[in-house]
Length: 267
Length: 258
Figure 1 (cartoon, each protein chain N blue to C red):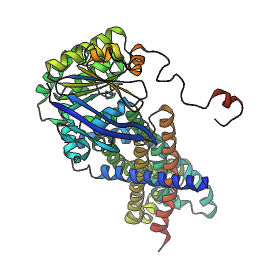
Figure 2 (cartoon, rainbow over the protein chains, first blue to last red):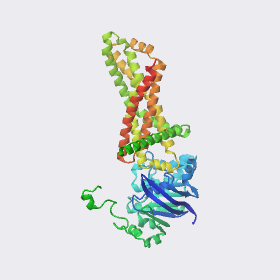
Figure 3 (cartoon, chains in turn red, cyan):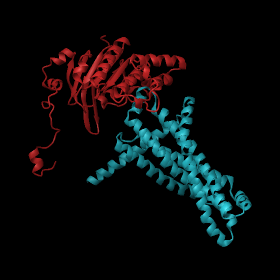
Figure 4 (cartoon, rainbow over the protein chains, first blue to last red):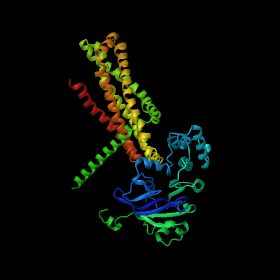
């Protein structure tokens, strides 16, 4: 339980001249559910892409099982990616093939299993997310929540060690949110996974997380178990948890003062 | 000094775009040997090639017919209407076949490729392929690239063949040119290497350029609806200009210098 699977060390990342992360460090323990929370637009998806090796940090390192993701050869990176899966916010199902073929896709790409075995595996994975009956449907026939569950079945098709969830609850009704929470929790313990859940749905994710980080203003403003987070004395953390409109995170996007703006000063 | 900074920034971004496009082409070219990809290529040949047949055949037919009509009205003044066959055949094989096919292909298949790849990017399908340890260049880009390069020369030949038949329909069946002279003078004038093969070479070059532009524009599109619409437009505009420019260069190389 205490082994570290992902270790981010003093990572600095900027894009288009804007600093997204200023020397952040975090550790993800093996076998647990780690929540990464933060306001929208803070670059939470970027964090997952950095962990998955799709983006490169400007300095600092990201270790996966002790190996630096960003110094691997392309071949090694692709080998490592078979051990991790990512659930995209949109689901990112391939729209031209059925749900069944979507889940079968990684199996057909990476294994030499016979079609019979693949069919069994796919139906089992779909059963796990409750969509065995939807195997023949096309992605555009699914609701948002179902699409995410189908994508989850695809993400676990190759039995990865780790799943990265990108905003799994965004835009979900309470029922599908409950379903997704249950699935993340159950899959994590049943398959012995490690999960990183990036989200701004604080209350929901804190019910299943083992450890949580809160990102804001380019750095980590709070970290700890859900209990510690809830009892945090930091104003910033409390603003985030309570959802206050104004506070340390200002309501206004940085701008010159309104008096200057209306007096003709340069914006 | 601002203009100097802008000039530098623009040049750099253009150069890096060319570099990225070349890297993508490299990835596409070197993804050939995989046997696994062959069914994907065949599927794409169907999408970009077979599904373009209708527009190619109809356009070829009408262009052949119009050429015969125009050619006849001029040639008949000199009593040379017997040369209608080679005139139609040579114009089609050397120029109109490859060029018009490429222009139609850019509008019909190129724009579709850009929109498809751009939407795959916008809906994170390309990212998800990468996270599944599947290289999108091999899985998505390469099959489409090769399908385009295979399809376009075949479409150009079909275009020319249908055009010649259209010319026959108007010239021989309607305007009364002798059928024997239409075919026999064509046969003795048209040279296999000089005319047919050169036309096919042109077509292959156009295919490389059009598919490359279409795929790169999609791959590089800003993943929003506006970005994809811009990328699709640029595919058609850039491809068309490239086709016409390259056609002049190729024609000069092939036919201009004796």
